[in-house]
Image (cartoon, rainbow over the protein chains, first blue to last red):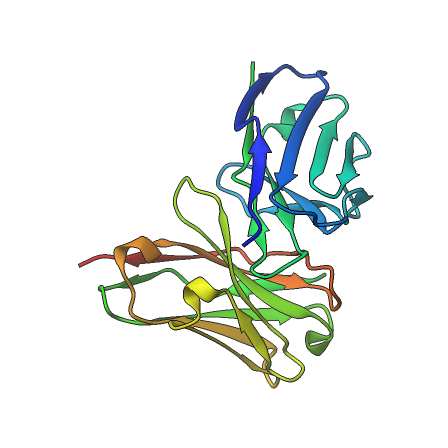
Length: 107
Length: 120
């Protein structure tokens, strides 16, 4: 199975901060990488697919980059509604696997 | 709009089976895959498998291969996930999530989730 490792597992940040979350795959997954946001008690929501394509309705402050094994999700200016847990997910090989999540908390 | 509505919470005893439904609306049911993903309380996301509603073909994660069955009913635009031989570790929220055809697999949207509790 392809292991997805996210770092950090949690972070504290303030509104307006720039936040970067890293996701590393245990093998080359090309650009088969997606990102999700889950706020407490809510259903996961697709933010970015295929590394850098923003899902419809997702604010432009979210962006993604990377290829191969190393990927990044960036929130340019953190907003109150962005405090959530973020997951990366690979679809290069079965089983599809997720990272362990990064919890973004209010400082 | 695209909507996935799942069946209600279930409480099961160890060793029993559970069958969760997911009714799709707002799009052509047979034009998208459906995935099942679960999440234990306070834990991460775990992919269980995928069904193609068009022909009914399935692929399961090896971890669940022996215990899971995914089916669909095209007359009601509903997919089902049945998990057998339940154990306490299966206590989780189970989500259905739509996925596009093709090699790139992502999940959007998700159903509201069904809490399955396994307890004696």
